[in-house]
Structure formats: C-alpha cells, structure tokens
Amino acid sequence: MNFEINKLLQEEIIPFEFVVKNTDFNEIEGKLDENGGLIRGTIEKISRGTFLVSFTIEMTMIYPCARCLEPTPIDCCYEYSDTVTVEDGVTTLDLLPIVEECIYINEPYRVLCREDCAGLCPKCGNNLNHKQCDCEKSDDLDLRFEALKKLL
Ligand SMILES: [Zn+2]
Ligand SMILES: [Zn+2]
Image: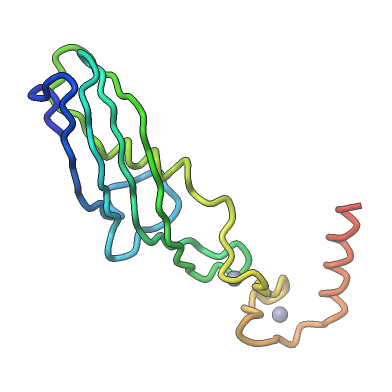
C-alpha cells in the first residue's frame, strides 16, 4: 500500500483503509486467515518530511498451539501511532512495512489452543487432547517429576 505523501499539505489529515493478506508479510510468525486484516487509519503531515501515521489492525491470526501444534485462531486488534520521517524527494510512503512491524511487535509469546491443553505424548507424538495412547504412564510421571525438579 503506497501512499502519495508529496501531495499532502501541512497538517492535512488523510484517512486510509485497506486489507492486507498473508502474502504481504515475511517476518511474522502467525498466518492471517482467509479474510486478511483490515487496516484503518490516518496519515498527517506534521512538517516537511515528517508524518504521523496512526492505524488499527483487526484480523484473525492462526498460530500453532505451543503444546499440541494444533492451528489456533486468535482474534487480534492492534493499534499503532508513530511519526515517520522520509528523505527529501521521496514521494510515496509504503505502509506495509509499518503494518508488519506493528504485528511483529504485538505477536503473542505463546498460544495455547485451550488453557488445559494436554499437549503431545513425548514418546509417540500422539495428540493427548484427542485420545490417550498406550505409552507407559510411569514414563509420563517421571517426565513430570523431572520438570518439577528443574523448578526447584
Ligand atoms: Zn493445544
Ligand atoms: Zn504416546
């Protein structure tokens, strides 16, 4: 999304609205769902070469659950407001890298499909939310004990 900034007058505020797709980004971990993300905001020329860019992003992003890797949709609504400076002679401002940065810094640290997700069996990789496997229970207990010991 390239915004023509050379035609903006001082203190003029211009609204913008556009939709971003998953393919617009390279650096973010989550995947946008098929609806993409709705960006709504304004750009204001503050002084020569300096612009205030403000917007909100609304979208659903899909992350693998940290325990069982099941794709988990998360409703996201992020806000961004910051000044951007451009060099003399630059006529357009690409908003996509700014949008990507905003998503990047807001990405959740750890997504769980549900609070009590049972995760994967460490032995066979079975998703324990769906069914129990036949791996020995005693091994599971040992693993939990190991984890507890680390906490002490
Ligand atoms: Zn899970
Ligand atoms: Zn198992």
